[in-house]
Length: 354
Image 1 (cartoon, helix red, strand yellow):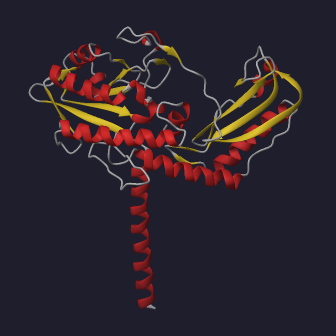
Image 2 (tube, rainbow, N blue to C red; image 1 turned 45 degrees about the vertical axis):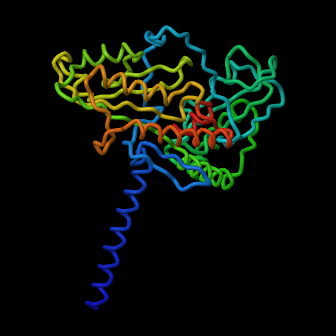
Image 3 (tube, rainbow, N blue to C red; image 1 turned 90 degrees about the vertical axis):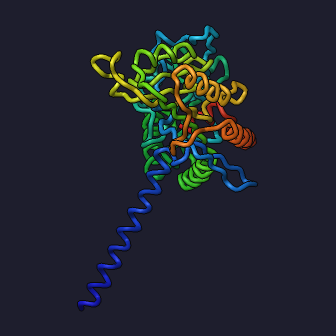
């Protein structure tokens, strides 16, 4: 009896330790991965330059306030296209109707929340006049509707509970407008979500460079003035400055962050800051916009203006050779994303890596 009890306790302890280990792996996967660059392709062993993880997902990164949306460098902004359902990353349900439905009759029945669990979903209508799929507006008439739920994002793959919530909301909408629903197969959608999540995990790249004061600390006001000279604008969240994208409403190209407590100090002019994090979320900006060059260039200019050293999360200097190696890996990453019809900066890539 005593031996059996001892064996059982040992087995239980091992299970607890295994559970803790798995939880740790899951947490590092969700929070943003322990390295700042995760670049992989199918033909080479994964290479991970040692930069700190840039933990904020695009949905968590603050855009400039509307009044400050214009680019500081005077370049015009470009209107951003509305999100469209994409069979590459969305499980799509069709909602046929017998006769056209006015948008003003459909709008009140669109679900108040556009999320199923951690996955966004969207409902679109086929405009009778233009023949184009669009977000539902009150002034249009629609001959058909469709709804899609995203099969993966940085929170992981679509699961059965999220899929069921999506179908329930779509069916409620369809019944309210006198339509039927043809939903995709749950097991197939969940399986595709896992494949998409695996692809995203292997091709996610987020870069960060730390700028550390060589001598005296900086005041918040001085930091803001210095960053403004290089095109950075205040974000909504205290302690974040952003370099806006050319597209209005698009995620920022770069995020410069520092201690939020310093930004919230009663006297920001006297609050001391000794470290900044300059982050680039690779999938959010197209390669043609040269975001890597913007990141590298901003790091060098800010370091010179602030008398700071550029280091990684291990306090090791990021040399020109290291920047060059990272750039080479990113070039291969861009090619791999484009080959999967998810080029960086596209709507699909921005949604998948969010």
